[in-house]
Image (cartoon, rainbow, N blue to C red):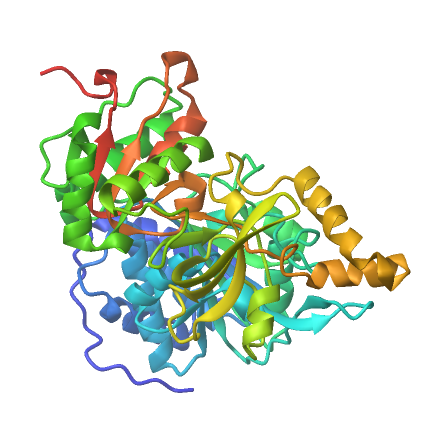
Length: 515
């Protein structure tokens, strides 16, 4: 396709050194994605014009890389964009999306969670989906039970852009029997994308954030691992230059300091700087009043308390419901809940969606409570819920496992789930054989009861990928001996969840330099 670009004489605000560096990096990229052509140069100019402001030096390198990547004739092309908070990562992705639209290239936006997809949708200007809902379809296993399969990729010459790629681990994919526990989501994503005709993949993430649970690093941001594991033609662009205007934000100023400390391997107390209109310390005695104020300003879905354990998240959720939201029952209409274990039973009963997964991390709102009941020594509720991040999906009926709401673990442990299986199985012994009993149990509403927790307070892993106007971070128990890289990454990730206001709850004086 020939693309004519008007106004090709652009003002370049970069220094000679910066432009030489960009060109040198461009030469290195040529060896990966192929030679520079007139089509590459035209795309580069157009992409430069798509930026709403003068690009930083890092964004200039990104423009060179993306132009060569998109126009490359090499097979199985992928590009990693690593960007720290405040470096213009979202601006860059938005510019890429607008440029691809002008070239009539199909662009598919994906993210690991529904909330992350909504954030992406907002800054990119086109619809986004979770990875699970896009790449999987509902099917049946060999025994006739609901299961999932990898969907065919119908796209040609499409560019898939996956945000928050640091969250993608080597688990969480499909299984032959459902349950999403035996296959790598990263494997499935790669297989899906590159099963299309000349499709390519951009992975966007911040490797200073927490890696997936059980990982020391983020597999989806590991260039060497992806190249060798999936035979990709791949390169990495790293955005490190903080956009000047972003440093007016106390949130990003202090996040930037944390990131520099992480790079230096310094595990002493971070020296945080207050005095910004969006960055505050908060005493525990003032917490209730502040929560009431923030809920009034941003709404119930605009505020979150991030803490370091499920136990403390439960305590905060209980107190917020009683003291701020004036909820007395164990569960009420209007409650926001986060799904903590994958479930594809209930949507399959209620809709004809091609993918009926209620994924770990999805946020739902209780519309009404039909009844509460006790069975097998556990407490349940029949309820009508809606998906907060998918308002187009009608409300539907579920059974909620009430006992999990305040359980100190992330979800019901395997031993308790197995005990529930065996208890439910006793109701189906009349079916005779083990296969029929197991099939009946797996369809039983109590065994399939949705495992959820209240979403007013979350651990950092549960909050990752989402953003809220106001965030309160609970320090929790901390000594100098507990300060390590993991804590600093936790704190950096928590900082970067806040859009407008950040409050540090009961943080030790050691975090703040003495005046």
